[in-house]
Amino acid sequence: MHWTIGKVKITKIVELETVGSTRFILPLASNEEIRRLPWLMPHFATEEGRLRMSIHSLVVETPSRRIVVDTGLGNDKEGRKVPTWNNRKDPFLDTMRAAGFRPDSIDTVLCTHLHVDHVGWNTQLAGGQWVPTFANARYVFGRTEFEHWRDHSDESDKLAVFNDSVKPIADAGRADLVDSDARISDEITLIPTPGHSPGHMSIHIQSEGEQGLLTGDVAHHPCQMAYLDWSSTADSDPAQSAETRRRLFSRFADTPTLVIGGHFNAGHIQRDGDAFKFVALA
Image (cartoon, rainbow, N blue to C red):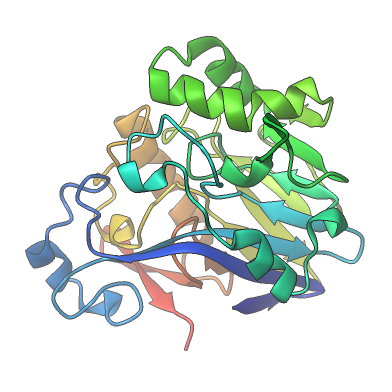
């Protein structure tokens, strides 16, 4: 799946797609409530009200950079809370290669935040050690985000994620810690969007008069545009995440900005009363 923003090309590389089974992350998004939002069908939900979501990476190609945004779950990882996320054997890297992206051709990995489903392919197991998957890349982490999980990964599952998918990057000298509003290239600037995690960042793309927004997990699903207070169970600060959604969506609503979610496909944000709706690309 491809999109373009001026001279910037974005390619979605899917690791896992789901239909339903999302109540653990969005408990208020019942089938009945989702059916009240017909604009979600068929792209973002089924007629029965089951949510469509994916775990994916976005390869962002600018005239000078080849960037992977977020890296999914990864293979051979242990200690995850969701059983099916442990010890995966997924052909994700083969899928990337088939799409024309060899791992050694990636020069930048940019993580919107450091949750389990956004850092997994940062590393791979080689000779019993976790090594950077993208050997020629610099890994860009938000400084606030990195320092938070370095210092506060007290729960066993969070410690496992940091130790196998984040710390090895820093230990290898491949990590660049940046401010949450840093400029990454001529086309790409970060936007601080805390709430889902303390240092969560979204990505603003500008090229040839066109704009794009990669939201990360500001919203896990477009239904959260209609119900801004439907915070995820994974949000570190639910009130802040709701306010971040309102602020970010207000900024880009009713503009031609191409918006792509961390777990959903592209569209445009429109105001809808006191909230918003998401119009999928045809």
